[in-house]
Amino acid sequence: PAIKVAMAKEYPELPHGFCVFHMNMNLKNIFKSHVVCKLFHEASRAHRQIEFLEKIRELSRVNMRTYEYLMRVGPHRWSRAYCPVRRYGGMTSNIVERMNNCLRYARQLPITTLVEYVRDMMQKWFHERRDAASRNTTQLSRWATEKLTKKMKHQISTRCAQWIMLISM
Image (cartoon, rainbow, N blue to C red; front, side, top):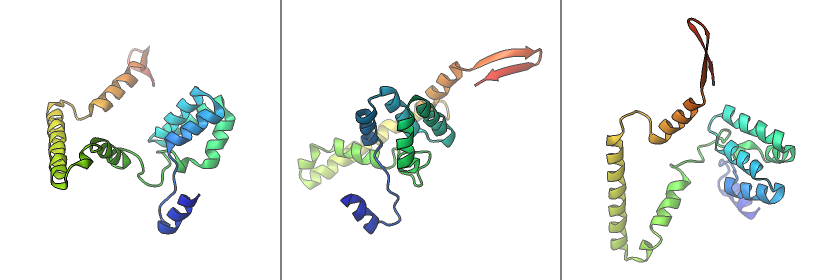
């Protein structure tokens, strides 16, 4: 509560959100269901509201108490789909966590050596990504291509008439 009060005082325009990892741990301790935790995780990571609603409806069918608990907290505090600001993703806290992890030993170096270390590391990262991008033959990332391929495998088409196909998605 003290952090929440201080944040509200210092940053009144900043919306208050909850860490999905810690919420998931609480759900695991309170409701003791791996299915509930999996559905919560999927709902929290859904980017589109329709995907979120599918997962949250499924969760409500599995455990209504969990659903009610999450709705009392408010999806705007923990879901990507209803987040009022850009809160999640590689361009926010993940890069800080990655840099902290990469520099955990280098922090002990003298400042000039540390700066040189960071420069070398960043140069290597940019080189690797530039090479990977130049080898990419599609406009989609590997992740997006794999996701679309996986979804397409589940598609079923049926011939209804000579010129009409029924596509099930």
